[in-house]
Length: 306
Image (cartoon, rainbow, N blue to C red; front, side):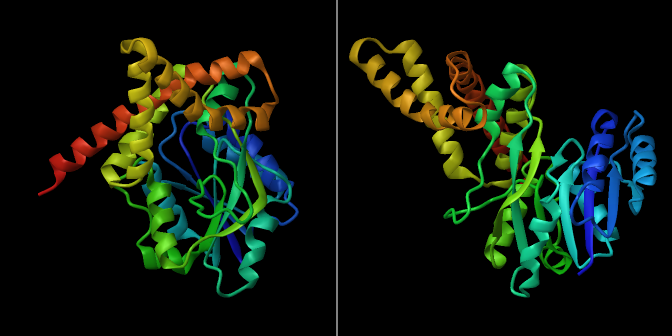
């Protein structure tokens, strides 16, 4: 089975060499790397080309300005492998990542496999942001919509689905996931892990969540999730405006809503009073940013609709 690894990047010279080193250390190397640059103005392609040559990795580079969907589609179109694995240029795959990710394809019925990702957080804020953004992968979980930091699929599936939606610069992986779900579903490889760096500041995370929400709104997906985000935002307004028993009720419900994020923080980084306080601050800021982006995306989608 021939496996192509597709990576998209834009101005990732600080991270791309680290990724190539991690690929070189894989227990099962890809048969080729297709590295698609979105129009970097830094030395991303030079770093990748040099690192791959030093490691003896088969590298094919391509230039495709545009959003991540266009870059991924271009990369997959160039891939010669029966199976295409996908990650991001700022991620660091664990040594057995690719081996474990593609192993399920020994079963001809498997069309897509989703792996896991864990936070690679160096700052206190990055850890807090990770608690909001990170979704742990569990073997046997009821529903699975993987991040395309850690996925693989048959190229024939990508062709059948029409690739990634190039009208989406964010939420393209979720839209693709939902199409895969309708076409046969994902196999989970919870032990195929990449490390991923969350945004290092709260402001950067808010901008990212706004973009994510806007992508979901444009695509018309994740409606239930954003209803829950809206409920959290409503509780936050109640904490500000309500008085007496209503405020205490809102606080209790908001605490219940915050509990899963606190649990993620503890799972990833251990118990920390300062960290958990940061999680509360992050939820208070990131939920409204996400909802605002979603409403913006819905508005844009309606404007474009005939």
